[in-house]
Length: 260
Image (cartoon, rainbow, N blue to C red; front, top):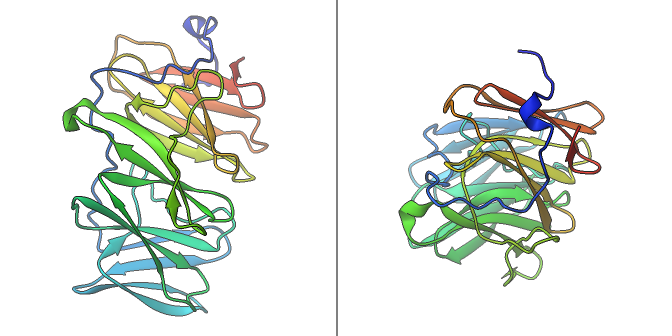
């Protein structure tokens, strides 16, 4: 299928209405692999979950044993793994067990220092890291559990504090969203993280600025054909985002956040 804007997309407005009422569970797909790798062109890290701990290793850097059982977070339904900060210096891992307290381990990728542990009361999952790894973005899953409602929150790593206010679209201050992450891309600088969400009302792209801690929501056209391919790609210069959902292709200018 060729990329482009179909006629139905011509009237798309960029809005903050990322809210639906009957979306599927927004939790990240459950990790199943006991060993997984992630790379950024500078190094390749293997995370191996063992009986009583987790081993993080990289060629030329040795290994670090992290107490507890952790895995690389799955960030979208296509099975993509996340957790590595854009500067390559921090690796975020999520606990295998789901408990009333959500647990994360932040690993310095030199593998020379013990991991830093984050514990958050409630149901949270990994979303993203800022470019320097100084801010951990997490998805807070809100009650009722089957409603698919969530908010994106920021944990300040240096201050060891969860900021009180959820991430909002600056234009409308909408903080509660609903949907299921299908695909994700990050712009070349690592500043913007784009996630394509499926929902029962309409699909949308959640654009998160990880440096300045705000988001922009872009509604996509509704379709009558559930299923099909869900893809998100970015041009080499990061200027145009291409989204495909249910066979509908949309192009978005990432400078102005409007459909072309």
